[in-house]
Length: 339
Ligand SMILES: [Zn+2]
Image (tube, protein in one colour):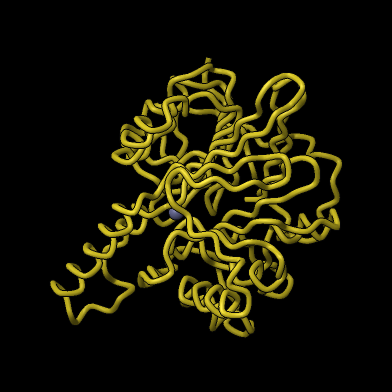
């Protein structure tokens, strides 16, 4: 995800890659956007050590050598298991890298930090960082969450000494997920963007005690791919005018519209739900979103899409009046609520 903040600054969150079908190579969507605009990045955040977030992050680390690197913890083991993810061309140079994307990202980050230790931003609750006119405030994780993750991993390791690292249970890594709120002042008040990372319900409850107004935001990157286990009233309470963006995760069939899914919960609270990409096939998308209408943008924005990797984007802009305007790239869609 790429976040623009005034006057001319960018925060890039996680790898956000696509596969360029013409050559099978990984392409960072964020980097493609910044290239298109001739812009530089100020802050890179790797929210947590899961493959779906880390893949391609190494491109950002080397491409933006002056950007700070925000990461909660460098010394936990990578949680790599890229199943059901993008199709990789076996002939591609990047094939080696993508089998262990978190390990690759951590290696690259550590090398960059050895060169330039000042790039490091150790993300911890209540830390604040200024990027342009915006304040990035860390909601999660706490030191306690990091310590818990270390203990939990050690316990799994002891219980299953023979199991390869990548087959150990994954959820503990969500516990150290970096959730932030990005705020800046406009002539009409404050613009607020809530980045939910993969933080789940238990931690939202604790966060809302320290940060009581989480529901007051213009745009939310919905936590944990819209899973029901991430839905919490701490950020759910608020006006229906807010815009929520969901990033799907195919191996867990997220987001879902059934009782085990978060979409029902979302539509009870806001009018605007956007999903950055469909399922691998249109019929799977329809099944996954049963009971909802899906509206792809019939007339895509007047933007050239010169290569296939520039699909599945959503641009949400908070205007001076506080209204949110949305543009959809091919492949992204608006979840329309049935009448
Ligand atoms: Zn995830």
